[in-house]
Length: 390
Image 1 (tube, rainbow, N blue to C red):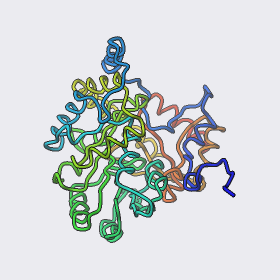
Image 2: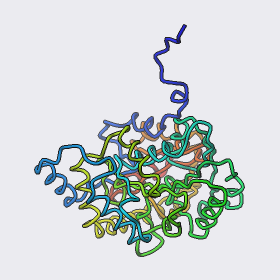
Image 3: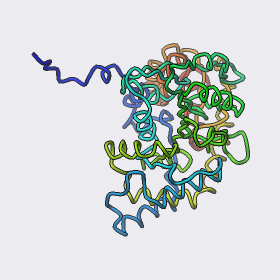
Image 4: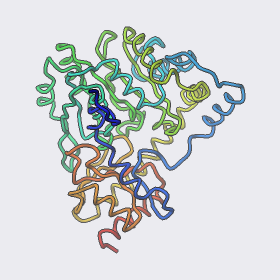
């Protein structure tokens, strides 16, 4: 007799829910909470981008578009990527409904049941769970922590990337640690993956939120890859252009992969909304100054927050070279989920628990510093209060 269960299939039931949301649910709606748990800025999207969406709506841009995105946006993204990393064609671009959708669709295109996927962690939990939805095996490879920074053991990673590995996932600059891979390591990984036919999925969501050079541009696999390399880069308008709620992203992919991705977009969402894509065109073509200003604001916020955290007894920190997060070890956070819940309840301070980013994150908490110095100072005051400090 067929099962009468009304539950989702077993693979879905076994997915780990986000403990970030669990903490946020305990404090959302409370006006006294100062929240830094989500990865988004405290400022709205720049006005010129919002105006572009309004203009497109007023012009009647409310219909379906091409699966891979409207031509002006694909061309704008291709020119943008070309300027940063080398020649890229619109044929190598797919527009998606968010960076999250880009990651999901890319994984659907590359990974199937029983495939082995190696994922560098600590990492945003969604990316670790995505392959499991498709029946693949997620093998995590942890960075190591010291007060000098988070480090990647290249020799061990290459050993882990066995010939039966289907793909390796690397997010750099990294959420939550701020770790950024260097070009030499990228070259070693790329050459190894070429030899063994392993796909590289580079989550480049934070590539423009990098503090290691004046251009605010992190090293990228796109800058060293050949057209026939098994490399896919996913990106988003959410971070650098402060468009988290818009849900617009893109994929840079080999031309041969595009037809399959177009079909998957059709079956997932059909297309990104046209008026939002029009805003994306404006963000790309007119937004470079806004991106650089946001990067500079983040660097100032990072320096302020890290200086203050370093003065707290027994707090272990390392300076993030990119992204928008401080990820630090703090006494009492051995159970980081309970620690963060207690912070919300006792002082109204909202941070993300380290366990959300994998077992290697336990004992740590994540603080999104995409905020004003005044707001950061208020959060620091509450953290000191929680630790019994004046």
